Every structure is written in C-alpha cells, then in structure tokens.
Image (cartoon, rainbow, N blue to C red; front, side):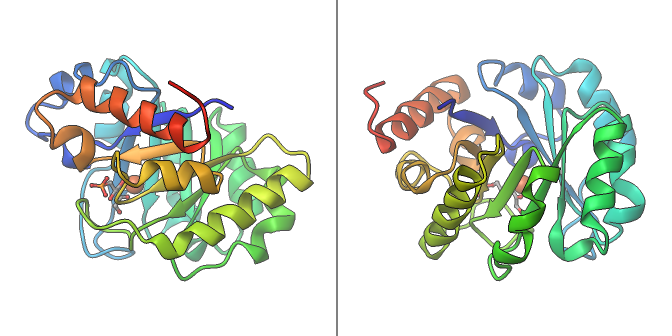
Length: 223
Ligand SMILES: O=C(CO)[C@H](O)[C@H](O)COP(=O)(O)O
Ligand SMILES: [Fe+2]
C-alpha cells in the first residue's frame, strides 16, 4: 500500500511560498488549506493564489476547502490546477453532484468529515470519490493535538472501502507527527497531512522522511 506524505503550507512562511514549496519537493503532494472565515474561524487564500501555487509547485496540489459555499466554489479550485479538491460533507447539499463536477473539471474529488461527522451516511457514496479525509482535529488551525478518538472512524472507513473493493484513499489531517502517524496508518489511513511536524522543523525534507518511516512501521513494514 502506498503511503503518501502531504505537508500543509498552513504552517509555512506565507511570504515565501515558492521556496517553501521547493523545500518539500520529496513529498507526494502539497496540502493547501483554503479557509473562508465562515466554515472555520480562520481565513487563508483563494483561487488566484492557488492557481499560482499550481504553476510553481514541484509536486501536485491537494486542496482542502474549509468553505461554506462548497457547492458554488469548489470547481474553481479544480480549474485553478489542483490535482485533488476536498470539500466538507457538512458544507455541501449535493455531494455527489459536486464530486462529479470536480472530476469533470479534471481533478480528483474528495470528501472531508469533521470529527463529529460519522462516515456511515457516506459509505454508499464512496465510489463517487477518489479520497475521504477524516479530520483528526477540529478544522481551522494548525498545531493542534491528534484526536485518538478518530481511530475507530478511520478503521470503519478502511473496512467499507475494502468491502466495496474500491480504490479510495483515506487521508488524515491534524496533529500528525512521527509519534501519531503510526497509529493512523495502523487504523487504515494511507495519506497523511502534516503542517507543523514538517514546517516547524529545521529540515523539512528530513521531517518528511521520518514521517514516512514511522507510517511504514505503523503498518508493519521495515522502512
Ligand atoms: O486542515 C488543517 C487545519 O484545519 C491543516 O491541514 C492541519 O491542521 C495541519 O496542521 P498540523 O499538522 O499542524 O495539525
Ligand atoms: Fe487541511
């Protein structure tokens, strides 16, 4: 099973994003947190900045939308060049239609669940998605502690994906460090977002490698 490490630029230096992207070129994708100040109490960037990031990034963009107007605005991030566009289940009134629109615009579609949102209502929709994001903190800010209480939900999601024979990635986001990533991998996650555990370190490339090793150990591989 491939294990992807996606550093979050939420913890990067926003005045030097091009060099911050170059520093994580050994990662699988760069995680871009889009916040609108309504769905979450924080405000970041929008489509024009995402478009420029896609033009200069050495690796693909994994865009995580924490926006209220997901149904209206998500497609513009696919058009801006994101490889994958993740919208929140709580923000969409028509998640199947929106996933199809994102895919039709050329990106992968993913659905995110806040900690209090169960996976069960979405199990029958999984074939419409390329990835599910299980939030392991309340969305809005970097640097929070990993919620171990999300491990059973990761496990139930892995079981549903396996039982249905689907090729759907399971991403975790929030509080991922070399100490927590193994538990998330063991529970069934295979795409790991890490902000402060990469950009909060002196050597982001070394931090990515130690996350890779710890994730592999979590699923019993000797990396
Ligand atoms: O979506 C997010 C917050 O809502 C971020 O991607 C996440 O918090 C990354 O930061 P850290 O690894 O420091 O927890
Ligand atoms: Fe995120």
